[in-house]
Structures are given as structure tokens and as C-alpha cells.
Length: 163
Ligand SMILES: [Zn+2]
Ligand SMILES: [Zn+2]
Image 1 (spheres, rainbow, N blue to C red):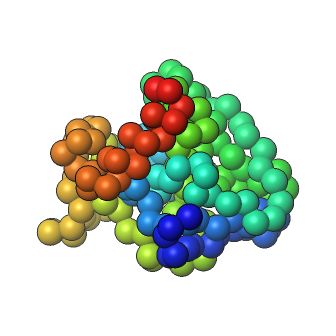
Image 2: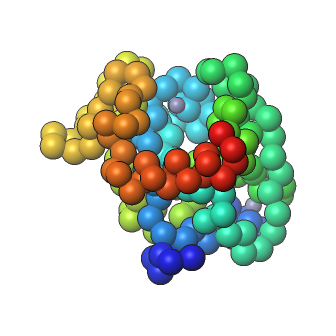
């Protein structure tokens, strides 16, 4: 792996420990009702990584198929002991891209959101800072928001999977 920057994280009981290699492709702050329900709070903060950049340092994960808004399901990887979610996969991409739960990082402050999405259901007391990450009523156009290198990383993942 060329990137030297790494980030470590763990579940609450410390059974699952992981290391991320390099910066995330993109970080979503999702204010949709599904994320609110699944986290039990106001939004979800997910950092997108190629699966190969997510290194399991100890423990194992239990993958639970959870209903999702798209109908394709979300596979959520949880600690089998404390059941805290550490990452998940969405839709038809299999385990190619992992949505890592930023709150499980040892230093979550290092991964602020690149975009706010589904602000149509944002809880009214959550005030987004002016001049901060762009905010969208629903989803957004990836090609317009992602940096070029992140788009290239995503394309490489898809190409490798023959998609
Ligand atoms: Zn745990
Ligand atoms: Zn959401």
C-alpha cells in the first residue's frame, strides 16, 4: 500500500480492532431516517474505503443483512460480542467498498464529512456550519462532488470486479 497515513479503530468491547490505510475516498454524513434509526441518533458518518484498505487487526466480524431504503439490503459488519457496527456494504457492490463507521475510529475528528446528504430529514436542531461541506436535499452526483483521485480509486475497484 502506497499510502502511509493510517487510522485505527475498534468496537466498544475491543474484540474487533482494525486499521485503515490512506485517506477515505469520501465521507458521507447521512441525515436520512434509515441512518437515524440504525444509529439511534441524528445522522450517520461513514467513510468509504476499498475493502483491501480495511485491515482487521484482531477479532472477527459478524455480517448481518439489514433492510435498506434501496431494497437491496445493507450488510452490516458487527462485533459478535458487543454488536457494535464497524462497517457495512451497500447495494450491489458486494464487499468491494466498505462504509466505515467514523465514530469507531480512535480519532474520529480526523474524518469530517465531505458532504451532507438527505438533509430533507435532517433533525431541525442540527445546524450545518456555513462554508462547510456541501449539503444535499437527497442524494448527489458523485462525479461532481468526489475528487478526481477518489473517482479513479472507485473506478479501479469496479474494474477489478469486472463491473
Ligand atoms: Zn465488541
Ligand atoms: Zn442514510
